[in-house]
Amino acid sequence: MTFDFIKFENWLKKRRLTAKTISIYKSQLNSLKRDMPQIFDIDSKDGFLSLHSLYTEYLNGSYLLDRVTIGSAINYFREVVPFINPTRWEKDTTTVDISIYYFDKKDYFIQSIALKDLADWLSLFSQILSKESLFKISNEYSFDSFIFYTEIEKFKRIIGKDNIDDVAVRIKYKDSQFIKHKAVIGQYLHYAGMQMGMSVSAINQHPMTKKIKSKNPKKIENQPASERYTELKPLTGKGAKQIQLGLTQAPSQDYALLMTDISTILNISLASAYDIIDYINHNDYYTKFAGIGRHYTVLRSYYSIADTNAFLIKRHSHGKEGEKGSFFSKVNYNHKGYKYWCGRKECLEILGIQKTSFYKINGYIKTHLCYTNHQAERLYYKPEVKHLKRVLDNVKSINKNSFLKRFIIEITAL
Image (cartoon, rainbow, N blue to C red; front, side, top):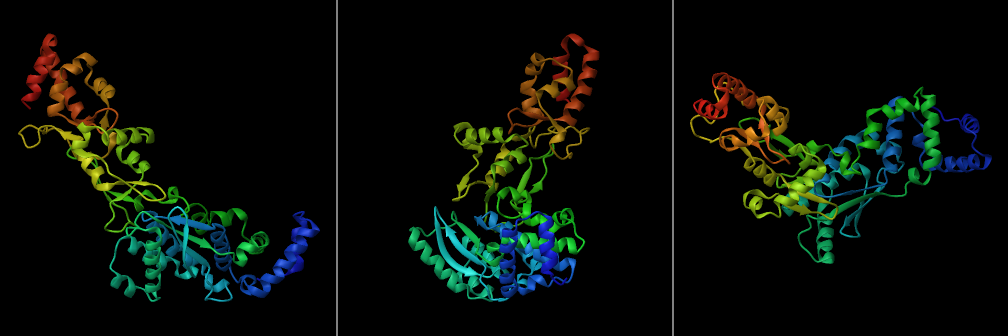
């Protein structure tokens, strides 16, 4: 697409921009044509989307990352940067676009780098937080990573601590032409998109545009939970749910869970998750079994995957494990997920008995039936409860006056 300022000026007038604004835009465009002529040489829709994505990414401004979110950021930049292809749009391919800082209550400048090198630099930083050896770090990258490592050692001396796994890194885009002239470039891209036959809606719905606007590493909420943890084993009648380290975490990592993750894993509300974690971490009865450890970074708190797994196991019961009769042969204990579990109210409805009757057999239930009690109330395995209902109906038909006693006798014999 050959840029025609006269047509662009007329288009701006139709958008009812003032003569003063148009004059400012004209001056800025002349500056851009001199310093970044490549942006006015768009030869395809792909080229336009590349430039539009670069502009959108620069508008994100800066990111603040810790040892958990940095893995997601590395993946993000490895996907985004090749698409936006910054070397195509920048006159000087050696331009340093980004300033890198350590953040520990305030910023400590480390180095300036080019956008094309950002993912590798973040990977290096992640390895340092994971305490990889200097030899491995220094030989893995084509650039001089030893200088970066030296700056980190200087930073440790400044803040007075050797362990820096709780600090964060800030990456900040410099005041490039894209930032200085963002208003006129935004108008130009709108105009160029129309010339390419691309509506604003089509541009905004493009996967890369959506990713840069809403899935960037600016907020941890943008990070998929699978990048912090994934499911190792589902909850079944035979065993507790278990999780493992997420897709972007360092192998040495354990503290990677947010409280929202705890809420999802335990299938409870966020408020209940806070209450339960606070209770088990401060109550002797629970703590002697399994508390869930917490580790702080300068940005937020993270919780232990190993401790969460231990807690899930401790609070899951499937009768007298190892004894004959701890599982009922007619019950399928392999169903996966919380939908196969129910609270006391639904359990009573299935069994068709009153609360007082339930309490009378509660001791038997606690020692013989599946349940999990990491929630506000104990959950029972529905396929097993339904099996007991069938047994209970049979016992009730034999002797209605003593069905609870007969039920216990009958069920114990199964």
